[in-house]
Image 1 (cartoon, helix red, strand yellow):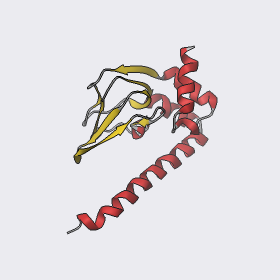
Image 2: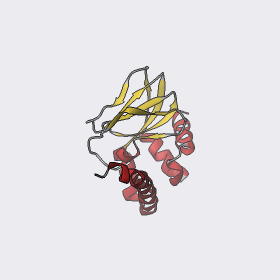
Image 3: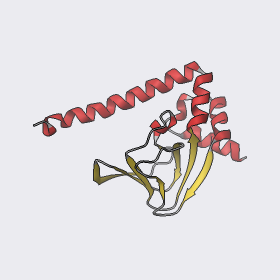
Length: 150
């Protein structure tokens, strides 16, 4: 039952719609449900996360190194926290902390990468999703370019 519940959580997550049902089931098998108390750090700036978290319940705050005064709150079930950590094993420049009681499903990078290597179609869809996210970030940065140039 736990495996089916986790597969359903992944099916409802905004990112894992690019996987088919069997791929989500394989990821669910490798995934780990985690609970965090208020104030607990999911990962800190400088850490290399093991993968990405799918939010089941609760609220997390994300604080970027370069803008510590503007934390972002995430509380929508199905939100993916740390998407880049599914494919990149580099230190993050962000701290993610539980605001209240939080439950997530951690999808390990190794499991996602293994699945992507086995399924070129999935890898292509994931690359397209990552590209779209990065273009969105660059568009936001571009709007501020005039303000930050000397």
